Length: 521
Ligand SMILES: CCCCCCCCCCCCC/C=C/[C@@H](O)[C@H](COP(=O)(O)O)NC(=O)CCCCCCCCCCCCCCC
Ligand SMILES: Nc1ncnc2c1ncn2[C@@H]1O[C@H](COP(=O)(O)OP(=O)(O)O)[C@@H](O)[C@H]1O
Ligand SMILES: [Ca+2]
Image (cartoon, rainbow, N blue to C red):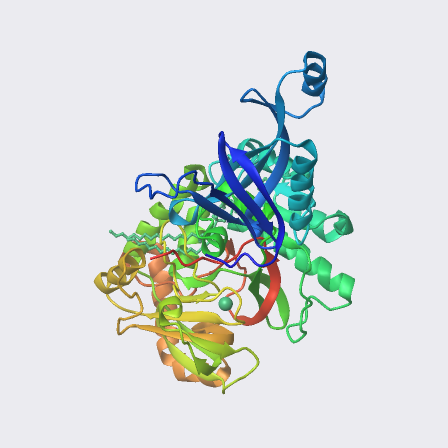
């Protein structure tokens, strides 16, 4: 248990008619049952409770009348005074309770005191301790069409009541078209009025929010958002994600679950988790930002194919995933990357599996790999999601200024299936001869048909053969000859260019989250 530190308040209060010693410090609220006899009671239920002050959701005053509680709206006070009943003051503390799989729920405990002044002192003391780093005014964007189209209902039924309880005021915008939220943040939103932005939707909706917020921040700070070499200014507003999409991997990988109530509670207690953002350029022209997966080949093809099946809801990804697995296309190209240099081996192996602590500014030399790939994936975070609870790159860090470049070389369908299946089990999906993983700060990709003249000359002979074949293949799709290009899946959006230059901007944004907590053994 955490050490309580200097006590701010200590009283004897009652909980469900039993006497408790209750104490408040800057870090903990503790209530300990008073035992009338010193005799040991082996069957007595837990007698000492403690809650970190940082995990108290709110406090409200109650009035207790002969055991039956009433909310303090004034009306009861008058009746009580008139009738002179035996009344005591009470207050209720709402706090975070941990459930299975990183889920949080709201629990409550009501303390009764004999003295009204004592009660008020407790309420105001707890409220004073809650003041720091918690948001008071939030700007909420809801995508009503994400995932199973439940965004609006999820927000209204599960999230809004908690915000009200915690005294948070909100401005809610239900989007009317794609990029509505992005453009509102870019041009209209009065950001000074808010302590954070809430995104109700999936990864695509989150992507809209960060594009709006990052662009706006650069303009406000006088930074050119289009330049690939410029150091971008970090965004000061934190972003909360209420999961209501199809994959929800950004929420899952930063909170540990895709549960709207858990997310709402992380927002209320004011958690803060920095996040790396990749900028993607093509020939010095800005294309997009990415925080989760940038995937060429398999994941690009799955996304392109699934967009036409949006009516299927989240199941479209499984359908297209199976289809693209069977299609088994591979793509040729050159990947170059700047490795992140390790400076210190990770001490705690249990947290970081194979990982090291990397110095984000250090650099090695650019390295180049040419080959035939089923997939080229850059995971800037683990990309854990319900489909793959450990994610595409289980040891990726949320905010270390690096991305994990995963190269899946051309291999048999059987081997690719082994790789895919390992995403869902404890087996290491990288421990296969056709997989390579590099932790990088920057990388480039060039599909074979865009390579330089000298490269092209080398390939000329093969190329002309290929062009003839690709014509034949259009007419005879059954021949199985692979197309030359895939597309990039950039956090669930399709990129219009295949040759890209990617750079990681360490800790460019912040989430209302705390990363995935280690579960007690
Ligand atoms: C055989 C089982 C294989 C399971 C392999 C699962 C790997 C899943 C890794 C998922 C990484 C997700 C990264 C996040 C991407 C999102 O940004 C993005 C957008 O999300 P949004 O719609 O919420 O806005 N989502 C996606 O691009 C979805 C990717 C989903 C890929 C699913 C692939 C399923 C593969 C099925 C292969 C089946 C072979 C079966 C043979 C018998
Ligand atoms: N009101 C709207 N109408 C149509 N599309 C929208 C609207 N609001 C947002 N979008 C777009 O919907 C897409 C998918 O949203 P998202 O919330 O990520 O759901 P999903 O996880 O199902 O893909 C995003 O690209 C986003 O830009
Ligand atoms: Ca990272």
